[in-house]
Image (cartoon, rainbow, N blue to C red):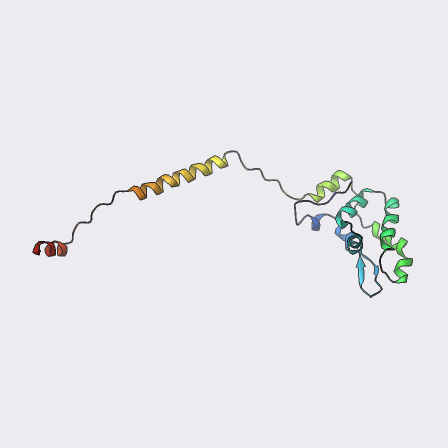
Length: 157
């Protein structure tokens, strides 16, 4: 069972797993540093889900799994030779939490419940505005009273 943060783009930064995931595994043969996150992603695993799963397991059971992942990478010979020791060091960076605590840490979204009265209030405001707008549209127009100049011009005809 894997626990991955769902529905919150900012949950990943608060997951407590980033220290582990962004830790360096070793140097690749091309000279680039390789992180745990890159290692897991290259193996087709969801890094946060895998790290969350490993965080719930005892370190003794997790070290061989991470070591197996590391030795599949194109690392320099020294990094491959030290894969077991590197795994033991990196596993210590995982937060050791229970499944329920880890699950709650991944869900940082605050649930919002709309009050039951809100739809009725919105409908009332819309109907009120419609009545007011209708009153303006349907208001009778009164003929303008002719100005004295218009009265003079009208009487000369």
